[in-house]
Length: 128
Image (cartoon, rainbow, N blue to C red; front, side, top):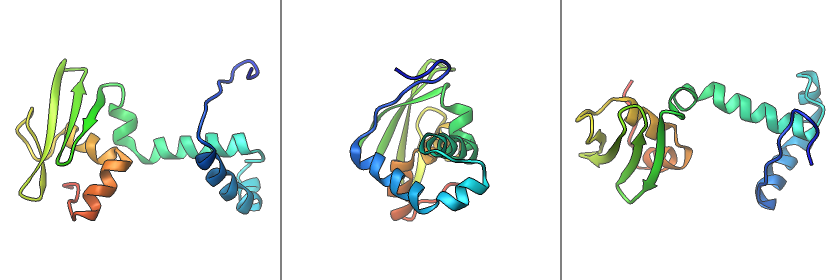
């Protein structure tokens, strides 16, 4: 049981080991930032990720990933109470719901790390 005010999560040993390895190698640098425990390091990394990814932090409660297929991502837009399908058309992402190449759904798709890596490898960039 975690102590009061805390929650526990379960991760695979592989994920745990990767994070712990980085923590061990970076201990002195992390101590200078006030991070003196592995738990503190994981919390810090989660907070950093959410800060860096403003799209995800801003829209995550409003948009949910349903599924990812070969050339499309299906999302649930909780604000519009609709399904948004984002597809690849002519080397660009296109939102079938908004009928646009740059909308919140496209931004959300780019905020998904596993999808972003695939898009990046195909040369598909987020419109600025």
